[in-house]
Image (cartoon, rainbow, N blue to C red; front, top):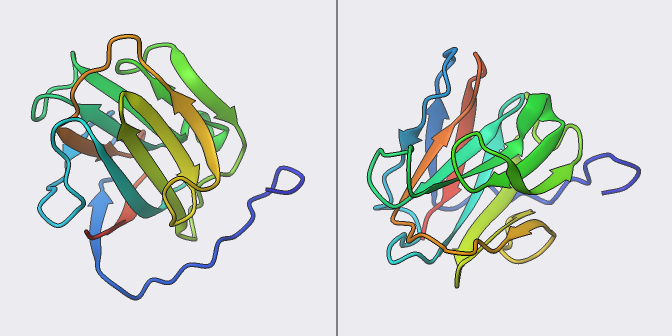
Amino acid sequence: MADGSWTPHVINCTGPYVGLTTPNIGTYTFQQISTSNLQTIAGGTSTVVFLVKTCYDANFALHTNPNKYATAMYEVSFGGHGNSRSFINGCLQCNNKASLFESSIVSCNKYRPFWLSWKNGVISAGKGLVAGSDQFMEWTPASPIVINHVSISTYNNNPGTWLFLEQ
């Protein structure tokens, strides 16, 4: 990143991607994604590499139980708060545990690459298609939960298109 602007990554979209969309609805609704074609998500350790095209609020729920978001879940947002910051929360819409204030991290018109990882009780996120590089957020919960499921959402009448790198 230079002078607050996005530094584009070279994106090679050839290869095995799983495409998903999040709908244009006015509520904060997560949809659980099937992990059959993605990297293994079980036992609390995994990494997801993805590209997303949305105007703001590319959100993840990392949770223990299928389609349950009230307890045992973490919320991770890329371009939240109107595309002004990204953050990790210890529960749904609670106080941020880690955050990055950077405007326009996601785009309405272009796919932007990111990765999200949860390993050894640490949740981290970064830019690009290489997990572990260009990291911009990290949080270690005091009492980590086991993450067995991943859900995605875009918020407040803001559709999104997602490409997840297959295993």
